[in-house]
Image 1 (cartoon, rainbow, N blue to C red):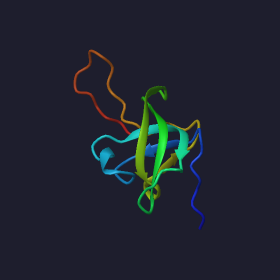
Image 2 (image 1 turned 30 degrees about the horizontal axis):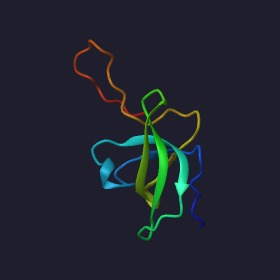
Image 3 (image 1 turned 90 degrees about the vertical axis):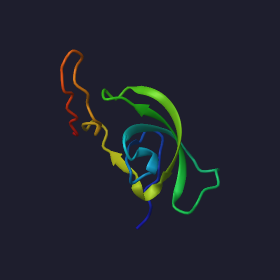
Length: 98
C-alpha cells in the first residue's frame, strides 16, 4: 500500500498516535506545506500548519514533528473532531467529541 501524500489544505486530527505532544490535548490543523527537505527518523516527518479552533478558524501557525502512521485525515466539510467548550457563564463545561 502506498503512503498517502500530505498536501497543502489537508485537515489533520493530531492525537497521541501522531506524537506524545498531543497526549493530553489533541488538535486539528490545516496543512500549509509538508517540509520534505528536513532530516528525520524513519516514519516521522515535519509539517507546517495552522492550528484550528472549534469553529475551524486558524489560531496559530505551527511547525510540527509527527509520526506519519499516526496522522488522521478529516474530510473537508465534516464535523471537526475537537473538544468543544461550554459557553461563558455556564457551569460544568462538558467536552463533546464529534
